[in-house]
Image 1 (cartoon, rainbow, N blue to C red):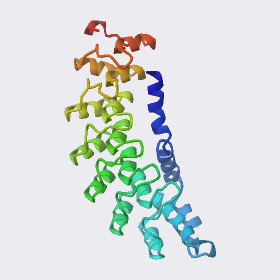
Image 2 (spheres, helix red, strand yellow; image 1 turned 135 degrees about the vertical axis):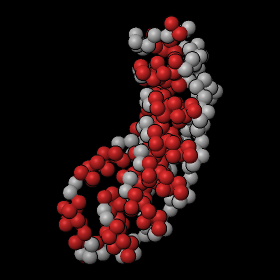
Image 3 (cartoon, helix red, strand yellow; image 1 turned 90 degrees about the horizontal axis):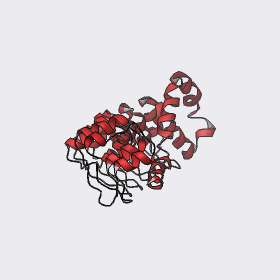
Image 4 (cartoon, rainbow, N blue to C red; image 1 turned 120 degrees about the vertical axis):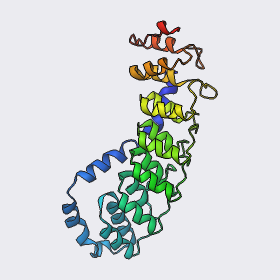
Length: 275
């Protein structure tokens, strides 16, 4: 069971979105825009930036924290709106990750593909869902983004919103008919991801949309068991209060109480609830 959990945690760690998206957004947004303009924009017409590749790199920088004027300037220089870096990120991936709605709208107006994939098969919608930018999520969906697009690990945008506790982004995805039962490569649904990360509000939302708490088919584990493994006390209480079956066994024949005992989690007590 522990090995299975470790593998699942590695899934998102292997993707650059786990640390890069948030940290780079913060760093770039924290930098002085005026200083960035002074350092970068005057060099647009310099000999060093005459090549298309140099201008593509500038377009990537503008997508992080630039202005519409800068964006238009580069597009007018002939930089393809769907140009991608070595990770497969397009300007729209970047703007979506950072929640830069004006740039998102303008890039789409200029022909940016809302369903373009990066090297891990993330679309701009995945990036917006991961960082929880609800307005960006809705804008992309209204412009044709696929609500149930899957990454190379089988993650849908709803998986990512649920894993990170982005309630309003999850609501928006569900409003656009995202599948509440989408399964990743290990058959985990958004409910599994919200459970193991202790996001009770998202968990409640998914349950209200028909997600199952007790289906062990294919996964061999139910959300309650994941919550116990992660030591999420409040979420454990929430699930127990919903009268879930405490005696469901995982693929190793263990119940949630067995798992709690093995892990030495004395705070998780099911005896009064019938375990």
